Image 1: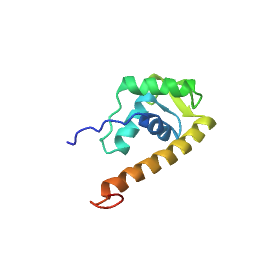
Image 2: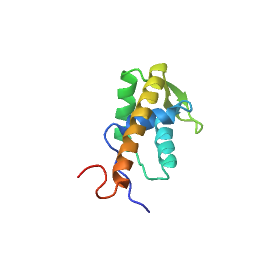
Image 3: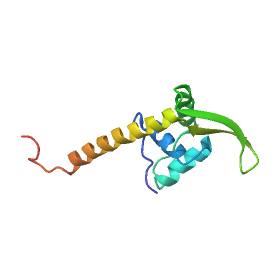
Image 4: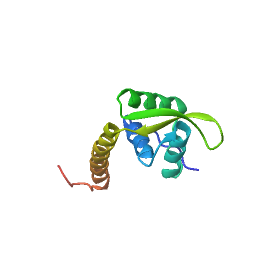
Length: 115
């Protein structure tokens, strides 16, 4: 099994918002979606996830409501707000540019782009 990757600071918000772009989910379902989408490489700790959810709700990027899950348990479901959709688009653009720049550096050979 591969070693779990550590999340770079600021990454969790965009991953959570992406998970919620497909519709409302409770926290555990958000974490599961991220794990499955990363082929198990990204494991989100509960404390970090719920801190991020609260922070994004305070910023009004998310809204929440209590519902009953498919397993007949009460859970808080989160959804993206219009402000959250705007943030997701902006963060996706920023992270795509950042990742592209890092990959360009990693693929560069000796003597390219400088001395």
